[in-house]
Amino acid sequence: MKNDKLTTEQMELLIYEYLEKSSIVVVPRFNPMNGCRYKDETAVWGTRYETIVNHECDILSVSKKMYLREVEIKISVSDFKADLLKKHQHIDKNIRQFYYAIPYYILDNVKELVTENAGILVAKIYEKKNYKGEVISKKWIIEKIKSPKNNNLAKPIDDKKLNVIFRIGYLKYWFHRKRKEKEEKQKGWWN
Image (cartoon, rainbow, N blue to C red; front, top):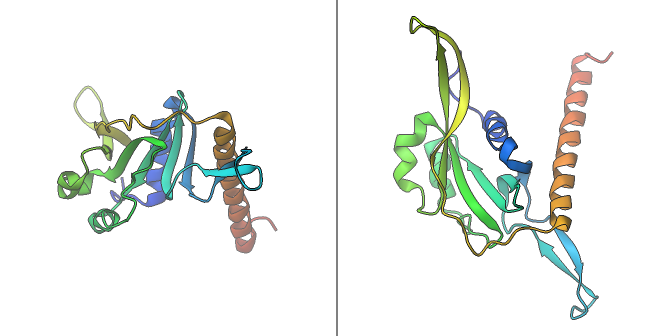
């Protein structure tokens, strides 16, 4: 591999690949502004608004049992330490499991800083070897090295919230495609 350093975007893709089989949906950069309206006769306007999460999540996934999981991506030690200064500390009544995802090359420097409740996912290079022990290929993989403690106060989300999460994922995909197309047009690819 030419480069043993990962970008945030590469980490997002690795995490997606790791979570996709155990999740209904996986969405990057999920914003706390997203939520749902519910009928509520006790509210002033007859409805109440509920957010899905109380802070931005690098990755938000919904497990097959409809629980929320958050993955916070940190690609450097300074990035990790800065995260520890955030007010919310990744505590949210709706999130059942919380993970830090980090590259192998910062693990030794941050492992002791990971909170008790957080899990750790590590991106590392997997080497495939032939029968002689020679490396024939390399690829990045995610390995879970610490399981998170479940937030037992978290409840499964309902279909309304699931639909919002799906919609946000759908919009992010198409926004990304449109931006890429615009970049390609500027380079002259479409002409």
